Image (cartoon, rainbow, N blue to C red; front, side, top):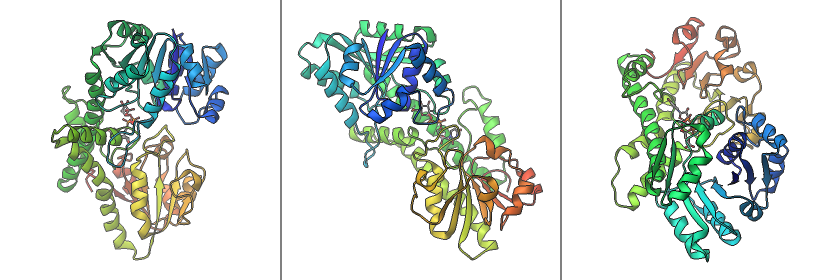
Length: 436
Ligand code: UGA
């Protein structure tokens, strides 16, 4: 099938490469010419394991091309997948300016029948809006159908998730268009949910909100475990063994970040507010998450106050919102650094995806030192704070690493380490719900 994926960001590029691998002829269209040039040369503008090989293979096979001529790319395909960003506005609602602009481009260039698919996460009512909007702008209403087909991939596992989806949600009001999209994905053999636009849109928001709820829930339990001496890892395991609950997304820590959970929980709350539905759980998911950096930092401050009254030097291990990505959006590590800055003399950061200050949110702050090795990161540190579970941090030999620190204190924000091993190395181990 001929497919144009409009928007060559993270979801768009992954979808384009996977569809090309499945044998479709795919054009990745984007108004950003510099990005198109890079992608055409097989260069990914972000980190995603396995995607660069897939990109290059398909470019070589001729099944995947990229173009900044969006109108031509629209005309060349039968299926248009829209994967543009929907960032949060200050009031929490999703900003649909990119989608509106794509809708205008489609209206201006549509030449024959197209199935127009929204992949981006969009507020409830957006697919209906797009259908109505195009209906007003396109003289021949039979030239298109709109389908909602939300994406459920995780950054860092995007290729695997797209090739092995646990479900494919197809929302729409045209049986013909639904059949075409079923065919597009038929090789993936996933469970299908065929529904209307609003149901598909809400499945996406409810999924992310539920996963975020699991995280905030376990983070609240971790605080209770902490005060009672119970072990949160064993609790999460013991609770998760109930198949009705499941062990996934019960890892407690400094909170969730990324481009999805924070934005989607906020957007769902603001949709509910707009339509007059009072939300309680959704608001608490967010407020527990917001509070987590403070909960951890209070522990750190208590410990540091006992050993120094000078401004602190803190080593930050990991700045991205999770490992295997260079994405720092809404990263709890950034919140932690911002909160630490006023009390610090220096913050020394180590992250495999960051080589200089310009790649951090503090390009001109002389207190921020970006380091390349663990030794350099720990030099003179009053404490180290583990924020992201990059593999390389798992193998740190704390017996040796401790020697570089001024005060051997380790705040484990992701429960990466075994407390007894760290303590045996003569380091004060701080975490939440790990029996200390
Ligand atoms: C999330 C969802 O997992 C995907 O299913 C969804 O498609 C995607 O959002 C999206 O809407 O596009 P992603 O943001 O890539 O994917 O990352 P996750 O792996 O879900 O992690 C999100 C955050 O939660 C990270 O900061 C992670 O550290 C944190 N987390 C995750 C926890 O704190 N505890 C856990 O048990 C799991």
